[in-house]
Amino acid sequence: MIEVEFVLPDGTRQRAFGREGYSLMEVGVRAGIPGIRAECGGSCACATCHVIIDPAWTDRVGPPHAAEDQLLDLLDRAPGSRLACQVRLKKDLDGLLAFAPAAD
Image (cartoon, rainbow, N blue to C red; front, side, top):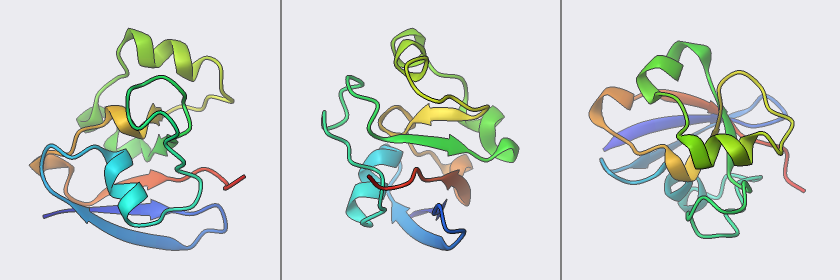
């Protein structure tokens, strides 16, 4: 299992676990992370799974692809912004730190 730690808007941290190949969105939804609504179910169509990847992890996660980049431009984007549905877990992401958005 790959461990992911989500930092919630109030600063608390919540650990979650997923298998290699799962998306960060799937892990967040299954763990009940507030703010990861995932309205499109992971098809990169809504941006309701926006997270910010900790700077220490952005190189390992990699950059967004073109369609994701366009959706991120519609948000209050920050360095490290990604759509959690487009981040696939792999072994070298064990311990990943992601900042979850405020729940609406």
